[in-house]
Length: 337
Image 1 (cartoon, rainbow, N blue to C red):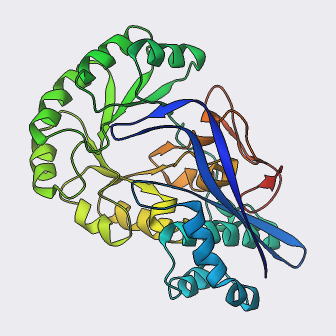
Image 2: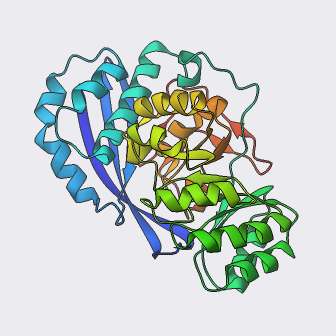
């Protein structure tokens, strides 16, 4: 296979604020894998919380570039298994795995969701994320993007007041994500008020390793609790079963579509709701997530919608939440620049 790596700096429409940071630009790595006249694309964004930079990913992948070029590609599953022996971060493996899956679908001339024996008869609508900012700015973002479902980032001293104010301006369903900023008792107390304000669920309110806190919250919360930072890799799914109502799978954190498919099956067997989330990826990463839609209860794939300009074409998300899939096979990605 031929492999190419390229760094992009994605400019956001607005500063994106969560409980621990705020940023205006997102660094991302795009990988292309080419074989027999077809090219697959993959993506992984940098992430300071997990100490991942594009430069680090480039160094890791470059160190095994010759091995990848010699690799006899047959299936994404075999390729992913081989990659896990190369001491790469899951972010690097994700970019390679997404490219391999896109390539595989293009070689087979089928979109991935069809290869996985699923249909688009029914799938969840993505939320649109409102990052932490002044209440006035958050209201302005909602007015700029009318949407049936918002994820509200929280983790301030005035979280309930923020949601109360936003509710005055929209009848949409709300989800809230505290990104580890609350205590167990805060979560329980907030859950009652948030339920009255039309919130659907709370995502990752406590620190990732506070499983005892989550056990208490699960028993006493008025809303379902979804794991994010507490569910990174496949082994975490079982750990979340007694402490959460569902999990949010991030492709970059778990290592791509291949392990995500296994996590989905395992979560469903354990009775957990399944969500897949994004990390402010371009349409390259979002189109990969979209292939999983028929298997999901919830989805957060608004990353490309938050960008000032995109670097690829692929799936298109319409104003009513409907997803338009391209005629191209695989994940349906074409790189623009």
